[in-house]
Image (tube, rainbow, N blue to C red):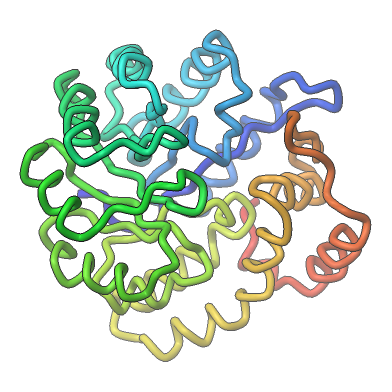
Amino acid sequence: MLNGIFTALATPFTQDGQIDFNALERLLTAQLNSHVDGIVLLGTTAETPTLSADEKKQILDFCVPRLAGKCKIIIGTGTNNTPSAVENTRAVLPYKPDAVLVVTPYYNKPNPAGLIAHYKAVAEVGLPVVLYHIPGRTGLKLPDNVLADLLTAVPQIIGVKESDYDAAHVMQTAVSYAGKLDYLCGNDDLFPHYLASNAAGIISAAANVFAPAFVQIYQLFQTGKTKESFELFAQVYPFIKACYAETNPTCIKYMLAKRGVGTPAVRLPLGDISDAHKTHIDNLLKTADPSWLAQ
């Protein structure tokens, strides 16, 4: 089961755009010190579209031995090209992840038959699959009946990372599947909503910086202290919103750099965040409770 807090790990870069493995080690250590339940490698937050195949292998070779046996590991392998997604999934078999994260194909917007065939092909590799539904990035919104058909046709899908902001869709999916598969929040700013909808946990980008806060929010909720859980979330909420003031992970990497982990560097087509957002984040971080921050 994929329960609890999963951090969608960022890829720290040096100022000239190379992977900063010293910073990556500090980031991993801070996450483990925060007692997260799992790490997602090579997801959107990792800037995976800009990483070469060799760089992806370097990241997995570096991270997996440091995480194995200490938390669960999910590896992103999805693309909008089925043979490529299959190849990516086959390439991570030696790392023995607990699951692979496979986004619904973007841009080409497959019809239901194509979507089912896509996930069947990936699942045949032999690893459990978490379906990543994020219509705001992919342009593909799964109707409830198509999702039902997909989950029936591909039983290897053990979870859904839901990043839709359609509250009716979220509730329908939660009612239909939470408790039957690992229904994971993909929207940091809606975490309490998902917890109240029986979600198993969250895959969070903001947890790169605020992992201890997410762990506390989750644990309070799970022990029946729902009021205290929401009160803590409300305090952290302005910081979560600031993480997404510009396209993920630009603000998160700026925050990490302010915390001494790597530089704010991102790869094109992402660019530096605005001076106004830098100032806002600087002022916010001065007010952050140290117990919220990964270190």
